[in-house]
Image 1 (spheres, chains in turn cyan, orange):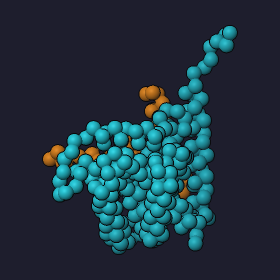
Image 2 (image 1 turned 120 degrees about the vertical axis):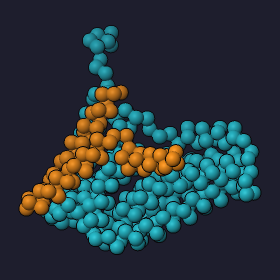
Image 3 (image 1 turned 90 degrees about the horizontal axis):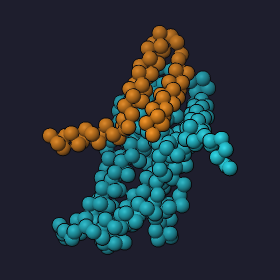
Length: 252
Length: 66
């Protein structure tokens, strides 16, 4: 297995893990308060939609010429990955609040308790729709990453397996913890995913534009190291800017 | 019509996000890279350098607003 393939599986796993931790918080918040039947049907329906998207779009993209595909996928991954990286840098430097799973869980429970009791198709409609939307929206980012990673490198199955593995791990961890996974270092994982998305986007985008990378696939590690160093410098710079200077004699 | 607008806004936020200048800069840098390679220059360095500058500029704008 090449370095690129290992990084693709790792990226899909980490992206899926961090998004599923957030989805788990939503599902738990609704399920604990309003019951599990409609909530789990909502989760199942969203999972089917996400699975159909991967199964339909993945093979369809493989018919596009590889250079065109890498240029388009690279551009999309760069735009998308830079959002993850930008937000992770802002969180690490104190410009954006960290995501608090305990607080999100509490808010979800309050909303679930206050929501009306509407029934449709034999289901508690609130539980069904909130669970469905939560899993679908969090899962869409994972689907995008899996399809982009899988199609540009020709390893859709491995990328999907990486993402599915993370779902299993998060569900088991949630069952064991019986609550939201608030101790998962979400921003660190998002930072790593942002770095991988940006680096792969840069690598494939440039290849699609006709570039020959020195060292071929090995240069991907150089690109990751470069963006990691840039991000480190940016976090340090923003932190320094954030801390107000101590006025002379303030300690007195 | 509002469904269409919501659909468009969703995908805009999904791909482009908070700062459209970053996405526009990425498109420009990719176009320049393609142009240079077409002219025989192996411009592998252009995209990473451009992305680093775009990221720094975007963060600087956000920090100034805060």
